[in-house]
Every structure is written in structure tokens, then in C-alpha cells.
Length: 324
Image (cartoon, rainbow, N blue to C red):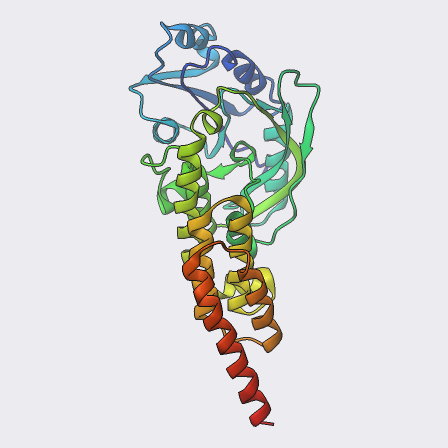
């Protein structure tokens, strides 16, 4: 039997008359034809400009309009109304490569487990879609994927292809989150489902001054800091060891250094605390490397804790010598 599932391409939009038609056109240009295109107008306040563009496509798309509630609410609305077996998100200012859906369905055909979430590579552009910068993601095993989400911020949600059943089993987008609703959901989904990387360019992501991540940068930074703290708390020891091949203490120290470098200081502090709490469980070399990494965290209370760390390491070394 030929595997040709119906795919729902979902385009949430708010005041998006500038780029919406390009996004819809890229969805209509898909080489895979068993699709539906759902456009959700999230309460635009542009005197009907966004709605007029959507309505101009007639029955080529399914158009809905709702009261403004944020991207998460628009996506959830579409999920509750989609008739496809798989969900594919397209931001109103981004573009799909013509074979985005076909390529992913072909990949699924080759997989025994169709309840798999696919993601891929993408390109970034500003004004001219032909002038791009490619973003190639590493191949990450499913067992290490939640760690990857924690220490890297490079996954593009519009490259994903998600079975609809996952939302029934793991929940929807958190509508209380304004900028991190996507990563929050991916982290939850990755606990139950395998994420498989398809090393192909699937999406062209537009960078411009009006996109939410730019206009709400301060909100995004604080929200990411809180979310990543939760991610760190949610990682199991098995996930940490599989991803870092290190002791638990050194694993947390590596996460702390990553958070510090990216400017997520509360998450860095939290990871440092966990690194300190788990000292002594690994080798002396791991403990020394953990201590060195923790010197990057700029908090007075953590600095004080580092003195305690040095004492623990010294005591550990003395005990090793006495036990020989």
C-alpha cells in the first residue's frame, strides 16, 4: 500500500499582509498534493488587509479568523480544526521549499515507526529569498535530543512534520507562553516520540525587524531563561550521560557554561547548583573540569560555593590516597 497521508499546513498570522501571500504561495507550490492549507488570522488589527489577502485565495485554502490570543492559540485552533494526519507549521513570513512535504513523506515511508517527528535544515534570508545562509543541523540521536534542545537554540519549528496523534497524547502549545511555546512543546514531545533529522533544506526563514522574536526580545530572553531552567530540571541522568559521556556533575557544568555564554543567567546558576550537588560521584578529573567550567558563572553565591567545591575535591583526593 502506498503511504500518502494527508498533511495539514498551518499558517498562523497577525497583521501579516506584507508577507502572507508569499507563504501561502509556497504552500500551494508543494510537489506533494495531498495537503490542506489552514490560515488562522489571530485577530489582526490592520483594517482587513490580512483577511483580504487570505480571502483572495478562495477555496484553495481553509481560512479562519479568531480573537487575538498569540501564536500558540492560533496553532492550537488550527490543530483542533485540521483534517490531516500530520501537522506542518509555516510562519506567515517564511517559505517552504517546493519539496518540503514530499521529501518528509518519503522519509516516513522508509521508517517502520510512522509515529516519528521529522525535522530538517533551513536557510535564512532577509530581503531576497535567493540570497541565503544555510543552517545545517547535526544528526542527534533521539536519546540525546532533549539535551540538544537544552543547549542549542537552532531547531526551526517550521521544518517539523508532526503526527496529529502526538497532540492528543502530549498536549498542545502552551498559550501562556508568548515566545517559547514551540520549544516547550518540542521538549514535551521528545519525551515520548523520536525526533529524526532529515539533512535537507526544507524552509527559508525570513529575518526582519517586525518578527516577534525581535519585537519582544526582552520578553523572549526572560521567558527562555525560565524555560531552560525547567528543561535542565527535566533531563534525566540517563539523558545527561548519553549526551555528554561525562559524570552528572560535569554534565551540569557543561550546561551551565552553555547557559552563561547564551545569556541565560538564572538557568546557568541553577545548573551550577546541580553540578556542585553532584560533585564526588565522578572521577577526580571530571570534578576538576567541573570546577573549571563553573568559574564562568558570575554569581557571588556561586563563587562562594566554588570554595566549597575545591574543599570537596581536596577531600576526595585525600581519601583516594588513603584508600590505596
